[in-house]
Length: 157
Image (cartoon, rainbow, N blue to C red; front, side, top):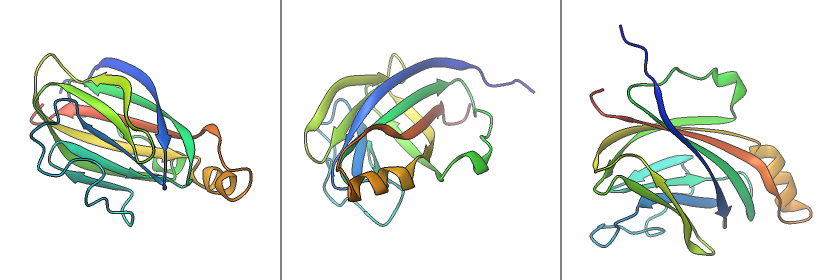
């Protein structure tokens, strides 16, 4: 059995507003439900066509997001090291994904999944949720307190 290999790793900041941020297909003109329409605040991770919605432990802060692209299913992380974990399917038409905020809209950073579109599986893991929530209740904002690892791999790989 072949072991999956890490193809690409990228670190981005996600500006969290109203306990939420999203990842959305960069070429988003034809998406039926653009961010943040129909955002489900009761789910850690929810998916719409071309879009992933992520709820945060904190109201307003900047989360650190590490995005990895693998050529097959990546190794499973030890769940005890994470506050939340979830998986979903994601379809990209361009192979590029943008980070979105409830406050500021689309961020400048683009996450590159591949040279073209395709069907992906994604696993989102998060730590620092309680710290981000406490920060929101106190001084208000923070940077890098809540951390995400988001791993993409091609469906069928």
